[in-house]
Length: 251
Image (cartoon, rainbow, N blue to C red; front, top):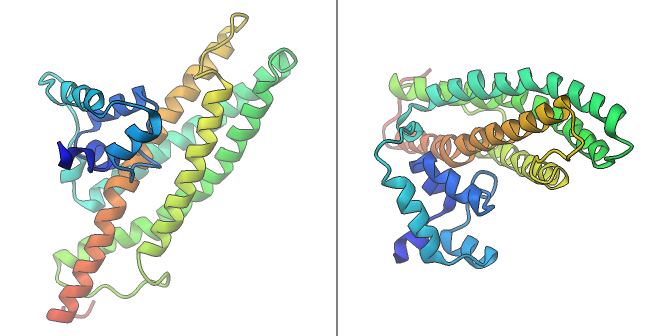
């Protein structure tokens, strides 16, 4: 038990994504703040460690539940998956949600001023996420793919202009934190995406889409913070150490 309570939340979810439902149930951020131990989040949130462990065990022992083992994926495949699934999802949903939120503000903003703040926050997220994903697609992901390829072919990896992979990763993680804070505000302002009694169909659909968007963002950030990023850092270290011990063929 001592080992389990010292395990980081992100490690639980990286090993089996089904545990994310348990952490979400208790309001524990497993993606942006997945570097906290089980003991730390229990102490902070007033949760009995034994209760949380029982909940986690219940989920992990469900044999009829299928989960994707992202941990076993090659890093270039994981980068491709994040880009093609999650980046495309964000690009597709942002214009739709912005249009719906603008409509809600015009029709319901007078009675529900919180919509104006939600709209502002989501607009900020839209711009930040677009820039964030572009940096990953142009700078970070290509370098990850290059490391995988060169390691397989026993070639040296030319030092990147950003020095070490930890530099862009540090920036990406900070930006993830910013989005985590922003969407916690949106969730709070929307009463956890619960439409008011006078909500129209557009209101209901918009809140449902916002909730789905946040859930997708949680998985998106989890895959990067808890799996892709640490493995990329380890891969770079392996390449550097290997080059020192036995120089590769020049790339």
